[in-house]
Amino acid sequence: MNLVRAELERLGARRFVQLMLVLLVLAFGVTAATTLANSHRPSAEEIFEAQRSAAAARGELERVHQLCLDRQRGAVLADDVREYVPDDCGEVDPALMERAPVAADFLHGVFTFAEEAGSLLYFLIAFLALFGFLVGASYIGADLNSGGVVNLLLWRPRRMTVLGTKLGTLLGATALLSVLASAAYLGTFWLIGRFAGRPGRLDGEFWGSLGATWGRGLLLVLLLTVIGFAVATLGRHTSAALGAIAGYLVVWELGARLVMEILDVVKVDRYMLSSHAAALLNGRIEFWDYRACDNGVSNSCNGLYVITWQSSLVLLLGLTAALTAAAFVAFRRRDLM
Image: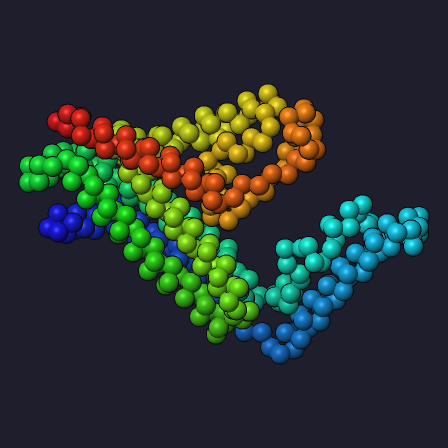
């Protein structure tokens, strides 16, 4: 327990951690202040006009969909149609759309919490993921480079215990910070929507979807925290983690992607970690690859393919576990002097 307390004090005393916390507060403060300054509580007349516009937009979608169906049945000749109607009526079917037009779409200068909470949560998770990766890398990297780990081992001469405690303390602190930051962040914007905008429709489906996104986002934050910690342990320096992520992005996400596209490799995005990170955060992500219909690799001529969060989580967990195991093995055998 004394070791955990000591690690918490060391983590909290690091200037880089304090700087990142200040930047976190500033980023959230600027976002909240900007939102508050550009929002107002709508009048009853504004809400009525927005509801009428939304109803008109939904009616227009239904009219175009019905016109498309009539053309397919031959009830309306194609030459008589004076507007664009797609060949696939599913493209204009209101029932198949992700969401129908709502009043919030026609309220200008009004912040609606139910409509904006998802985007705000993505911003929060992106910042926390960056925070976790950088803090995780600097936390162990600086100690290895400065000799702090050696001094700690003189007090507690058990390498695996020391490294495991460092990692556990880092994950616990990051998880706690993420929970507190999420509550404060979303709570602030709920208050803005309540008193300077519109809360929107906050039913069980909304909170369930938002909670699922937040849970998957927290997993992504913790995974990136562990990856930053593990890579810095392997490289014995914070810059090792930064160099590794920069090298991966340049060599694989950009370079290898370009080469695979030149070679007409099918479904390139499924080989990119960024795609799996996005799938984990969003729940699923769809891609379209025209090559699936050109080179005969696919049995069906359908270029649409989906990456789900379950498969992405398995991949990212495996990668994180492998890096962590390698870091522990290297730390156990390495000469730290």
